[in-house]
View 1 (tube, rainbow, N blue to C red):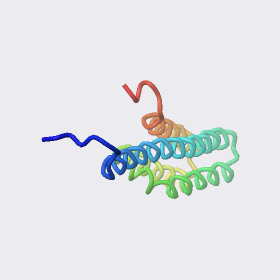
View 2 (view 1 turned 60 degrees about the vertical axis):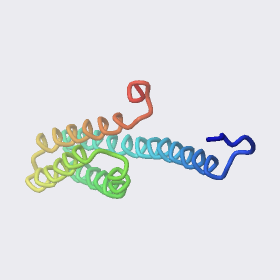
View 3 (view 1 turned 30 degrees about the vertical axis):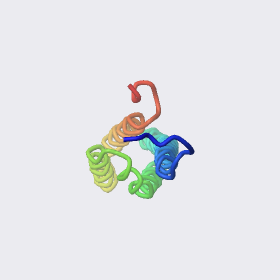
View 4 (view 1 turned 180 degrees about the horizontal axis):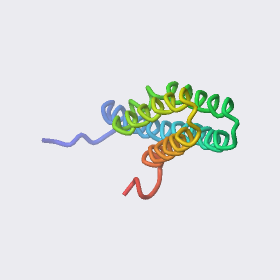
Length: 134
């Protein structure tokens, strides 16, 4: 078995290119999805305070905007993320629908706060940090 000495072959270049592409795709997806999760969690945290202060329509509109943002990025999270937290987040959104229909401000606010924490936890699990690398 002689080792080829000379220029780098096509397979080596292709392998390095694929690995570099996967690395960039992972870094960009983590950056984009974490940024979106922070925005959605902030909308839900605002809805907590709006519901508790009596601004019911604005609170419900904030949750609906958060749900729209979540559903638009759900396919990407399905590719790069874990399915179990996604199912829990979907269940919490369903609970918020019930609380909004029943006009229960404290349950609605606590559901929004729990949902915001789930979204932050899911975002932190995929964020590029030393804890996640090790």
